[in-house]
Amino acid sequence: MTKLDYYLTQDHAARQRTMLISVSVGALAGMLAELLGAAFNVAVVVCVLTVGGLEIIRAVSYAPPVRKIIQSSADFQETRRYLLGLVYSAVGCLAVAFWASPRVEAMVERKLREATAGDPPYDKANKLIKSALQNDIRINSATVEIVRRKVAGTHSRVTGDVQASVNLTLAQLDAYQIYVLTGIKLNVVPRAVFLSAYTYSVNDTIRVNWGPNIGEDRSRATINAVDFNRAQSPAIFSYEGGGSRDAFVSHLTATSTMSGGAFVPPAFIQRDSSPSKLAVFDVTVLNLSQALDDIIWVNVTFDRCRINYQGGRLQLKWVTFKDCQFNSENESARAILDRIRQQGTNSMTWGIP
Image (cartoon, rainbow, N blue to C red; front, top):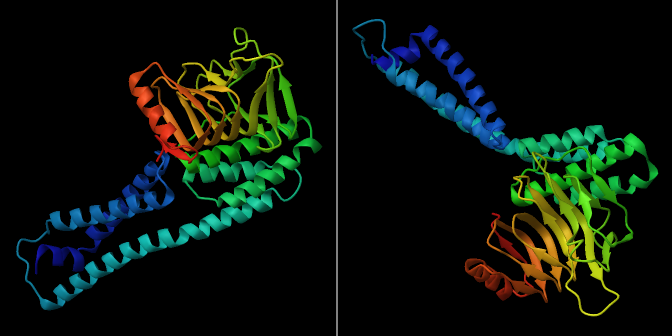
């Protein structure tokens, strides 16, 4: 009888201790993987591999309490059955993990629709979205858009804390969509600004606290910069002092008009040099200037804009440029702008998987 045979068929106490330790360490490894941002399926794989690895290491390194072991074919068959069972169990756990994922996602989608079926506040929906974001549970984009439009439709009917809760739900939904499309998680603060379907005329920079600014609908929520003085008001939106907070602008159109002759249009958005993340999602930018550096652009169309890029971090996902002018004082940045120009009106992705 070999050492492995003895361990698997005779020393039950040693096997029980090994199983207890390996399962505990495996569960801890899986939890740690999730805390570090791994998807649920990946965490399960980490758990199973950790348990299996510890079991194998213990079996191989096992030292029996007796010096002389007599080998028997019966014990060998028992060992073989045990090892096959271990392999089948590991494969079964992995199969269940991946098979269960679509069922979990379908359940989350159903609960999200149910949680937003009635009147606000939507605290349960907020928790579901946050959980889906943390655990990388993929909700169908069509479901997210249906829920978003439903929730946005309740905004005008509520006030005060309930309206703030609706804003938070909309912010969570957009932050989730941005994460699904880019893999970038945003630290969304509870304070969110909602812009109903309307044309807002502004003649000065909107200085925004870092946080979400959400339009009701890309084609119907419009901000029009009228007669901007570039020296005093260089951009429609200005983000400063982010600290640990992130921000995004979503679901609107920004444009500019000038009552006089030729003019240099203001920028759509400008930001400070803080480490905070700033994203623009599902937006049309028309007749404005814009620096692309250090902003996350997702599903954005620039139409007849003056585009500037100076070599900062460039993150584009499904971004289209129509009849735009490009400028840069940086040689390497000009090479990138040339590649963007060559795309024509085709949607472009750069710097985002």
